[in-house]
Image (cartoon, rainbow, N blue to C red):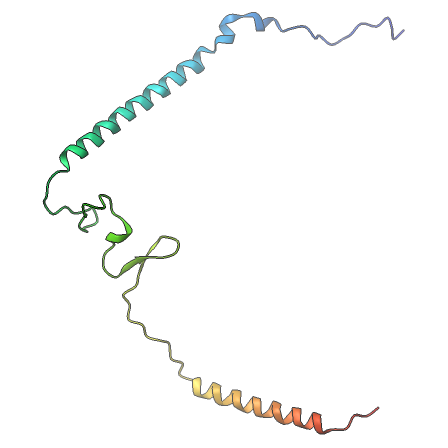
Length: 138
């Protein structure tokens, strides 16, 4: 009975595979073409801006950055060397103020804490001496 049964699964190639208009994917190609055109347009715009900057940057006047600091000829863009006085970059590259006057914190009850620590140390030493002087009991 099993030998005479037919397969119920269709392993044939789908009919839509042979349709050329479905294989072309014209919409996807159009989107890719539009994206490439936009990228080309942005690249042309950037090249024009860079050319304009290179040609107009020959003046010798005092130039200032958008944040008020003078721009040196060596560093066209604002760099870490051009931070305002009293500001530096931390390890994670964030600006921090380093011109604060250093005032160490002074505790108002430091003397009392030192005296209490010395009292405790003397008590512990006396306890240790008593333990060492006592005879073991077995």
